[in-house]
Image (cartoon, rainbow, N blue to C red):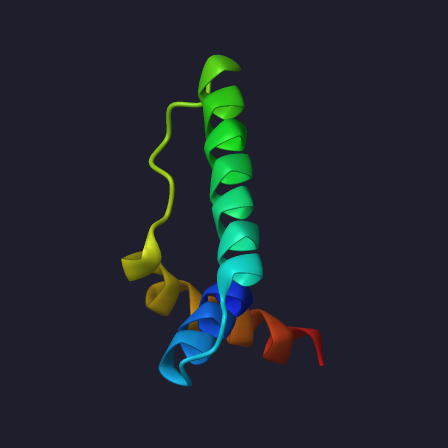
Length: 69
């Protein structure tokens, strides 16, 4: 989804038509909303990570990669 958002931002910055990419982004957001609703309906009650958690998770991923080598 981040790739689609970046693509839309790039098209807007270059004053290009971004309607198709923006529709794709809206579709992804709707799918994500449905998935979250299904997760909650199935008993999911934990806190989902947000963009602020993304920075904290990256070092953990890289540490895992180093441990595998």
